[in-house]
Length: 416
Image 1: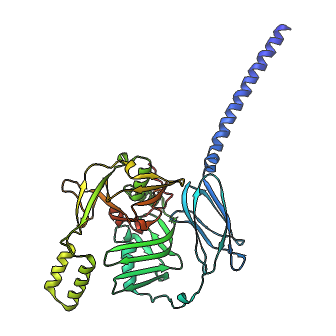
Image 2 (image 1 turned 120 degrees about the vertical axis):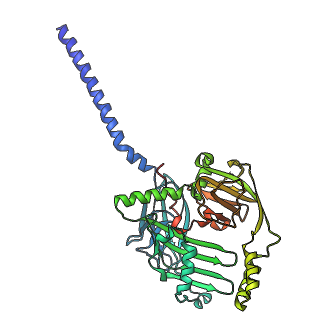
Protein backbone atom coordinates (compact mmCIF):
# COMPACT_ATOMS: atom_id res chain seq x y z
CA UNK A 1 0.00 0.00 0.00
CA UNK A 2 2.82 2.37 0.87
CA UNK A 3 4.43 1.64 -2.50
CA UNK A 4 1.15 2.41 -4.25
CA UNK A 5 0.83 5.75 -2.47
CA UNK A 6 4.44 6.65 -3.32
CA UNK A 7 3.85 5.68 -6.93
CA UNK A 8 0.69 7.84 -7.06
CA UNK A 9 2.56 10.79 -5.55
CA UNK A 10 5.31 10.49 -8.17
CA UNK A 11 2.73 10.20 -10.94
CA UNK A 12 0.83 13.26 -9.72
CA UNK A 13 4.08 15.26 -9.43
CA UNK A 14 5.12 14.19 -12.94
CA UNK A 15 1.70 15.06 -14.36
CA UNK A 16 1.80 18.45 -12.65
CA UNK A 17 5.25 19.19 -14.09
CA UNK A 18 4.07 18.17 -17.57
CA UNK A 19 1.00 20.38 -17.22
CA UNK A 20 3.11 23.30 -16.00
CA UNK A 21 5.53 22.85 -18.91
CA UNK A 22 2.65 22.73 -21.37
CA UNK A 23 1.17 25.92 -19.89
CA UNK A 24 4.52 27.70 -20.20
CA UNK A 25 4.74 26.61 -23.83
CA UNK A 26 1.21 27.86 -24.54
CA UNK A 27 2.00 31.14 -22.77
CA UNK A 28 5.04 31.64 -24.99
CA UNK A 29 2.98 30.95 -28.11
CA UNK A 30 0.33 33.40 -26.89
CA UNK A 31 2.94 36.13 -26.29
CA UNK A 32 4.41 35.60 -29.75
CA UNK A 33 0.96 35.91 -31.29
CA UNK A 34 0.18 39.02 -29.28
CA UNK A 35 3.48 40.83 -29.98
CA UNK A 36 2.31 42.32 -33.30
CA UNK A 37 -0.89 43.48 -31.61
CA UNK A 38 1.09 44.99 -28.73
CA UNK A 39 3.41 46.72 -31.19
CA UNK A 40 0.44 47.98 -33.15
CA UNK A 41 -1.01 49.44 -29.98
CA UNK A 42 1.94 51.79 -29.82
CA UNK A 43 0.89 53.35 -33.14
CA UNK A 44 -1.33 56.42 -33.14
CA UNK A 45 -4.98 56.80 -34.11
CA UNK A 46 -6.95 59.89 -35.14
CA UNK A 47 -10.71 59.69 -35.43
CA UNK A 48 -13.36 62.33 -35.75
CA UNK A 49 -16.24 63.88 -37.63
CA UNK A 50 -16.29 66.67 -40.21
CA UNK A 51 -19.31 68.98 -40.41
CA UNK A 52 -20.29 72.24 -42.08
CA UNK A 53 -20.40 75.03 -39.51
CA UNK A 54 -22.59 77.11 -41.83
CA UNK A 55 -25.07 74.44 -42.93
CA UNK A 56 -25.02 72.31 -39.76
CA UNK A 57 -24.65 69.05 -41.68
CA UNK A 58 -21.98 66.33 -42.05
CA UNK A 59 -19.60 66.57 -45.02
CA UNK A 60 -19.18 63.29 -46.89
CA UNK A 61 -16.11 62.51 -49.01
CA UNK A 62 -14.03 65.33 -47.52
CA UNK A 63 -10.29 64.64 -47.87
CA UNK A 64 -8.62 64.07 -44.49
CA UNK A 65 -4.87 63.54 -44.43
CA UNK A 66 -1.62 64.19 -42.60
CA UNK A 67 0.40 66.63 -44.65
CA UNK A 68 3.63 65.36 -46.19
CA UNK A 69 2.90 61.76 -45.15
CA UNK A 70 1.27 58.61 -46.49
CA UNK A 71 -1.75 58.73 -44.18
CA UNK A 72 -5.02 59.84 -45.74
CA UNK A 73 -8.70 58.95 -46.08
CA UNK A 74 -12.13 60.36 -46.97
CA UNK A 75 -15.08 60.95 -44.67
CA UNK A 76 -18.07 58.61 -44.61
CA UNK A 77 -21.65 59.72 -45.32
CA UNK A 78 -22.02 60.79 -41.69
CA UNK A 79 -18.79 62.83 -41.85
CA UNK A 80 -16.79 60.38 -39.73
CA UNK A 81 -13.20 59.34 -40.47
CA UNK A 82 -10.38 57.30 -38.98
CA UNK A 83 -6.63 57.31 -39.51
CA UNK A 84 -4.94 54.32 -37.89
CA UNK A 85 -1.47 52.82 -37.58
CA UNK A 86 0.21 56.23 -37.45
CA UNK A 87 3.90 56.58 -36.70
CA UNK A 88 4.31 58.73 -33.55
CA UNK A 89 5.44 62.30 -34.17
CA UNK A 90 4.17 65.78 -34.96
CA UNK A 91 1.94 66.19 -38.02
CA UNK A 92 -0.29 68.76 -39.63
CA UNK A 93 -3.81 67.41 -40.12
CA UNK A 94 -5.48 68.86 -43.21
CA UNK A 95 -9.14 68.60 -44.22
CA UNK A 96 -10.15 69.76 -47.68
CA UNK A 97 -13.62 70.07 -49.22
CA UNK A 98 -14.68 71.90 -52.39
CA UNK A 99 -16.15 75.30 -51.60
CA UNK A 100 -14.78 75.37 -48.04
CA UNK A 101 -11.69 76.86 -46.46
CA UNK A 102 -9.12 74.16 -45.71
CA UNK A 103 -8.82 73.07 -42.09
CA UNK A 104 -5.35 72.81 -40.53
CA UNK A 105 -4.37 71.55 -37.10
CA UNK A 106 -0.97 70.59 -35.72
CA UNK A 107 -1.13 67.34 -33.73
CA UNK A 108 1.36 65.33 -31.68
CA UNK A 109 0.52 61.71 -32.46
CA UNK A 110 1.36 59.10 -29.83
CA UNK A 111 -0.08 55.98 -28.23
CA UNK A 112 -3.15 57.84 -26.91
CA UNK A 113 -5.95 58.08 -29.49
CA UNK A 114 -7.05 61.52 -30.70
CA UNK A 115 -10.68 62.37 -31.43
CA UNK A 116 -11.72 65.58 -33.19
CA UNK A 117 -14.94 67.39 -34.06
CA UNK A 118 -14.02 69.48 -37.10
CA UNK A 119 -16.19 72.32 -38.37
CA UNK A 120 -15.54 73.59 -41.89
CA UNK A 121 -16.47 77.09 -43.05
CA UNK A 122 -17.72 78.07 -46.49
CA UNK A 123 -15.30 80.24 -48.43
CA UNK A 124 -16.25 83.86 -48.02
CA UNK A 125 -16.86 85.92 -51.16
CA UNK A 126 -15.96 89.46 -50.22
CA UNK A 127 -15.59 92.52 -52.41
CA UNK A 128 -11.85 91.95 -52.70
CA UNK A 129 -12.41 88.44 -53.99
CA UNK A 130 -15.08 89.25 -56.59
CA UNK A 131 -12.53 90.95 -58.79
CA UNK A 132 -10.15 88.01 -58.59
CA UNK A 133 -10.49 85.55 -61.44
CA UNK A 134 -8.55 82.53 -62.64
CA UNK A 135 -5.87 83.33 -65.18
CA UNK A 136 -5.95 81.80 -68.63
CA UNK A 137 -3.79 78.69 -68.89
CA UNK A 138 -0.48 79.57 -70.52
CA UNK A 139 1.97 77.00 -71.82
CA UNK A 140 4.84 79.43 -71.22
CA UNK A 141 3.89 80.02 -67.58
CA UNK A 142 3.34 76.30 -67.04
CA UNK A 143 6.76 75.44 -68.51
CA UNK A 144 8.37 77.95 -66.12
CA UNK A 145 6.37 76.50 -63.22
CA UNK A 146 7.52 72.95 -64.03
CA UNK A 147 11.16 74.07 -64.09
CA UNK A 148 11.03 75.49 -60.58
CA UNK A 149 8.40 73.23 -58.98
CA UNK A 150 9.69 69.88 -60.23
CA UNK A 151 13.22 70.95 -61.23
CA UNK A 152 15.37 69.50 -63.98
CA UNK A 153 16.92 66.48 -62.22
CA UNK A 154 16.86 62.88 -63.43
CA UNK A 155 13.99 62.28 -60.99
CA UNK A 156 12.08 65.23 -62.43
CA UNK A 157 12.19 63.69 -65.88
CA UNK A 158 10.26 60.73 -64.46
CA UNK A 159 7.56 62.91 -62.92
CA UNK A 160 4.33 63.98 -64.57
CA UNK A 161 1.51 66.28 -63.48
CA UNK A 162 -1.71 64.60 -64.60
CA UNK A 163 -4.03 67.62 -64.27
CA UNK A 164 -2.01 70.78 -65.04
CA UNK A 165 -5.02 73.02 -65.61
CA UNK A 166 -6.02 73.03 -61.93
CA UNK A 167 -2.96 75.26 -61.34
CA UNK A 168 -3.67 78.99 -61.55
CA UNK A 169 -0.51 80.85 -62.62
CA UNK A 170 0.21 84.54 -63.09
CA UNK A 171 3.50 85.99 -64.37
CA UNK A 172 4.35 89.61 -63.61
CA UNK A 173 6.80 90.39 -66.36
CA UNK A 174 8.05 93.71 -64.99
CA UNK A 175 8.92 92.14 -61.63
CA UNK A 176 9.98 88.77 -63.12
CA UNK A 177 7.75 87.01 -60.60
CA UNK A 178 5.67 83.89 -61.28
CA UNK A 179 2.97 83.16 -58.71
CA UNK A 180 0.49 80.32 -58.49
CA UNK A 181 -1.88 78.21 -56.41
CA UNK A 182 -4.47 75.47 -56.82
CA UNK A 183 -7.98 75.16 -55.37
CA UNK A 184 -7.97 71.42 -56.03
CA UNK A 185 -5.34 68.72 -55.63
CA UNK A 186 -2.53 68.58 -58.18
CA UNK A 187 -1.98 64.92 -59.06
CA UNK A 188 1.71 64.13 -59.53
CA UNK A 189 2.99 60.74 -60.63
CA UNK A 190 6.58 60.23 -59.48
CA UNK A 191 7.89 57.14 -61.23
CA UNK A 192 11.41 57.81 -59.95
CA UNK A 193 10.51 57.07 -56.31
CA UNK A 194 7.25 55.19 -56.84
CA UNK A 195 4.83 57.71 -55.36
CA UNK A 196 1.57 59.27 -56.46
CA UNK A 197 1.18 62.68 -54.82
CA UNK A 198 -1.98 64.67 -54.22
CA UNK A 199 -0.66 68.20 -53.66
CA UNK A 200 -2.80 71.11 -52.50
CA UNK A 201 -0.69 74.06 -53.66
CA UNK A 202 -1.40 77.00 -51.38
CA UNK A 203 1.43 79.23 -52.58
CA UNK A 204 4.06 79.17 -55.30
CA UNK A 205 6.41 82.04 -56.04
CA UNK A 206 9.46 82.25 -58.26
CA UNK A 207 11.46 85.47 -57.99
CA UNK A 208 13.40 85.73 -61.25
CA UNK A 209 15.50 88.62 -59.96
CA UNK A 210 16.82 86.98 -56.80
CA UNK A 211 16.39 83.48 -58.25
CA UNK A 212 14.51 82.26 -55.17
CA UNK A 213 11.66 79.73 -55.15
CA UNK A 214 9.03 79.62 -52.37
CA UNK A 215 6.55 76.75 -52.19
CA UNK A 216 3.82 76.19 -49.63
CA UNK A 217 1.38 73.33 -49.79
CA UNK A 218 0.04 70.08 -48.41
CA UNK A 219 1.12 66.81 -50.06
CA UNK A 220 -0.34 63.35 -49.51
CA UNK A 221 1.81 60.41 -50.65
CA UNK A 222 0.46 57.14 -52.03
CA UNK A 223 2.56 54.16 -53.14
CA UNK A 224 2.38 53.37 -56.84
CA UNK A 225 1.66 49.75 -57.77
CA UNK A 226 4.51 47.88 -59.44
CA UNK A 227 6.11 44.52 -60.10
CA UNK A 228 8.38 42.91 -57.50
CA UNK A 229 11.50 44.11 -59.35
CA UNK A 230 10.05 47.63 -59.77
CA UNK A 231 9.20 47.87 -56.07
CA UNK A 232 12.77 46.80 -55.23
CA UNK A 233 14.16 49.55 -57.50
CA UNK A 234 11.93 52.16 -55.90
CA UNK A 235 12.97 51.03 -52.44
CA UNK A 236 16.66 51.39 -53.33
CA UNK A 237 16.06 54.77 -54.97
CA UNK A 238 14.18 56.07 -51.93
CA UNK A 239 17.03 55.05 -49.64
CA UNK A 240 19.58 56.71 -51.91
CA UNK A 241 17.47 59.88 -51.91
CA UNK A 242 17.13 59.84 -48.12
CA UNK A 243 20.83 59.58 -47.28
CA UNK A 244 22.39 63.03 -47.29
CA UNK A 245 19.01 64.80 -47.41
CA UNK A 246 17.94 67.53 -45.00
CA UNK A 247 15.55 65.02 -43.37
CA UNK A 248 18.51 62.68 -42.74
CA UNK A 249 20.56 65.59 -41.35
CA UNK A 250 17.94 66.86 -38.88
CA UNK A 251 17.16 63.35 -37.62
CA UNK A 252 20.89 62.70 -37.10
CA UNK A 253 21.28 66.05 -35.32
CA UNK A 254 18.62 65.08 -32.76
CA UNK A 255 20.36 61.78 -32.07
CA UNK A 256 23.86 63.33 -31.85
CA UNK A 257 24.75 60.95 -34.65
CA UNK A 258 26.07 63.33 -37.33
CA UNK A 259 29.62 62.01 -37.60
CA UNK A 260 28.70 58.34 -37.89
CA UNK A 261 26.05 59.26 -40.48
CA UNK A 262 28.60 61.11 -42.63
CA UNK A 263 27.76 64.77 -41.81
CA UNK A 264 30.12 67.55 -40.72
CA UNK A 265 29.01 71.09 -39.82
CA UNK A 266 31.17 74.19 -40.29
CA UNK A 267 30.59 77.90 -39.95
CA UNK A 268 30.55 79.90 -43.19
CA UNK A 269 31.44 83.59 -43.02
CA UNK A 270 30.22 85.67 -45.94
CA UNK A 271 30.16 89.35 -46.81
CA UNK A 272 28.69 91.02 -49.91
CA UNK A 273 31.20 91.36 -52.75
CA UNK A 274 31.81 95.15 -52.99
CA UNK A 275 32.71 94.85 -56.69
CA UNK A 276 29.37 93.31 -57.64
CA UNK A 277 26.32 95.61 -58.03
CA UNK A 278 23.04 94.59 -56.37
CA UNK A 279 21.22 91.74 -58.10
CA UNK A 280 18.20 93.87 -59.02
CA UNK A 281 20.42 96.45 -60.73
CA UNK A 282 22.25 93.79 -62.74
CA UNK A 283 19.03 92.16 -63.93
CA UNK A 284 17.54 95.54 -64.87
CA UNK A 285 20.63 96.47 -66.92
CA UNK A 286 20.68 93.09 -68.66
CA UNK A 287 17.05 93.54 -69.72
CA UNK A 288 17.70 97.08 -70.90
CA UNK A 289 20.76 96.35 -73.04
CA UNK A 290 19.19 93.21 -74.46
CA UNK A 291 16.14 95.23 -75.51
CA UNK A 292 18.20 97.89 -77.34
CA UNK A 293 20.63 95.34 -78.77
CA UNK A 294 23.81 96.74 -77.17
CA UNK A 295 26.02 93.62 -77.28
CA UNK A 296 29.10 95.16 -75.60
CA UNK A 297 27.19 96.47 -72.59
CA UNK A 298 25.19 93.26 -72.41
CA UNK A 299 28.43 91.26 -72.27
CA UNK A 300 29.80 93.55 -69.52
CA UNK A 301 26.72 93.15 -67.31
CA UNK A 302 26.66 89.42 -67.93
CA UNK A 303 30.20 89.23 -66.54
CA UNK A 304 29.03 91.14 -63.46
CA UNK A 305 26.10 88.75 -63.11
CA UNK A 306 28.51 85.78 -63.08
CA UNK A 307 30.69 87.30 -60.37
CA UNK A 308 30.52 85.81 -56.89
CA UNK A 309 27.89 87.50 -54.75
CA UNK A 310 29.95 87.18 -51.58
CA UNK A 311 33.45 87.13 -50.22
CA UNK A 312 33.37 83.87 -48.25
CA UNK A 313 35.48 81.56 -46.15
CA UNK A 314 34.80 78.49 -44.01
CA UNK A 315 36.05 78.17 -40.43
CA UNK A 316 37.32 74.63 -40.81
CA UNK A 317 36.68 73.57 -37.25
CA UNK A 318 33.69 71.19 -36.98
CA UNK A 319 30.75 72.55 -35.00
CA UNK A 320 29.51 70.19 -32.24
CA UNK A 321 25.80 69.39 -32.25
CA UNK A 322 25.16 71.13 -28.92
CA UNK A 323 26.20 74.47 -30.39
CA UNK A 324 23.23 74.50 -32.78
CA UNK A 325 20.57 72.17 -31.28
CA UNK A 326 18.05 73.34 -28.69
CA UNK A 327 15.12 71.60 -27.01
CA UNK A 328 11.72 73.30 -26.73
CA UNK A 329 8.70 73.15 -24.43
CA UNK A 330 6.83 71.12 -27.08
CA UNK A 331 7.35 67.36 -27.11
CA UNK A 332 8.98 66.22 -30.34
CA UNK A 333 9.84 69.76 -31.46
CA UNK A 334 13.41 71.07 -31.58
CA UNK A 335 15.15 74.29 -32.59
CA UNK A 336 18.27 74.91 -34.63
CA UNK A 337 20.15 78.16 -34.11
CA UNK A 338 23.49 79.57 -35.24
CA UNK A 339 25.16 82.80 -36.31
CA UNK A 340 26.35 83.50 -39.86
CA UNK A 341 25.65 80.49 -42.11
CA UNK A 342 25.81 76.74 -41.56
CA UNK A 343 28.01 74.87 -44.02
CA UNK A 344 26.95 71.20 -44.06
CA UNK A 345 29.15 68.60 -45.76
CA UNK A 346 27.90 65.07 -46.45
CA UNK A 347 31.01 62.97 -47.05
CA UNK A 348 29.34 59.85 -48.45
CA UNK A 349 28.10 61.48 -51.67
CA UNK A 350 29.73 63.66 -54.30
CA UNK A 351 28.30 66.78 -55.92
CA UNK A 352 27.56 66.03 -59.55
CA UNK A 353 26.30 69.55 -60.34
CA UNK A 354 28.78 72.37 -60.92
CA UNK A 355 27.47 75.42 -59.05
CA UNK A 356 29.74 78.40 -59.60
CA UNK A 357 27.96 80.41 -56.89
CA UNK A 358 28.49 77.73 -54.22
CA UNK A 359 31.63 78.38 -52.18
CA UNK A 360 34.01 75.47 -51.75
CA UNK A 361 37.48 75.78 -50.12
CA UNK A 362 40.32 74.93 -52.51
CA UNK A 363 41.53 72.06 -50.32
CA UNK A 364 38.06 70.47 -50.03
CA UNK A 365 37.05 67.48 -52.14
CA UNK A 366 33.79 67.28 -54.09
CA UNK A 367 31.68 65.99 -51.20
CA UNK A 368 28.04 67.09 -51.24
CA UNK A 369 27.59 70.56 -49.72
CA UNK A 370 24.54 72.48 -48.51
CA UNK A 371 24.43 75.96 -46.99
CA UNK A 372 21.71 76.87 -44.48
CA UNK A 373 20.70 80.44 -43.66
CA UNK A 374 18.17 81.26 -40.92
CA UNK A 375 16.01 84.34 -41.50
CA UNK A 376 15.21 84.77 -37.79
CA UNK A 377 18.37 83.27 -36.31
CA UNK A 378 16.50 80.08 -35.40
CA UNK A 379 14.04 77.59 -36.90
CA UNK A 380 11.89 74.81 -35.48
CA UNK A 381 11.87 71.23 -36.74
CA UNK A 382 10.27 68.01 -35.52
CA UNK A 383 11.43 64.51 -34.68
CA UNK A 384 10.65 63.40 -38.23
CA UNK A 385 13.36 65.77 -39.51
CA UNK A 386 10.98 68.30 -41.08
CA UNK A 387 11.39 72.08 -40.75
CA UNK A 388 8.05 73.37 -39.46
CA UNK A 389 8.17 76.69 -41.32
CA UNK A 390 10.00 76.59 -44.62
CA UNK A 391 10.00 80.40 -44.78
CA UNK A 392 12.42 80.51 -41.83
CA UNK A 393 15.14 78.60 -43.68
CA UNK A 394 16.97 79.25 -46.94
CA UNK A 395 18.91 76.32 -48.39
CA UNK A 396 21.62 76.58 -51.02
CA UNK A 397 23.61 73.87 -52.75
CA UNK A 398 22.45 70.23 -52.73
CA UNK A 399 19.37 70.72 -50.54
CA UNK A 400 18.17 73.64 -52.68
CA UNK A 401 18.18 71.31 -55.69
CA UNK A 402 15.90 68.86 -53.88
CA UNK A 403 12.46 69.71 -55.20
CA UNK A 404 9.20 67.77 -55.30
CA UNK A 405 10.65 64.70 -57.11
CA UNK A 406 13.29 64.26 -54.36
CA UNK A 407 11.04 64.67 -51.32
CA UNK A 408 10.00 61.75 -49.10
CA UNK A 409 7.00 61.45 -46.75
CA UNK A 410 7.71 62.39 -43.13
CA UNK A 411 6.96 58.86 -41.94
CA UNK A 412 9.60 57.36 -44.26
CA UNK A 413 12.19 55.13 -42.61
CA UNK A 414 15.15 53.53 -44.44
CA UNK A 415 15.54 49.80 -44.01
CA UNK A 416 19.07 50.15 -42.62
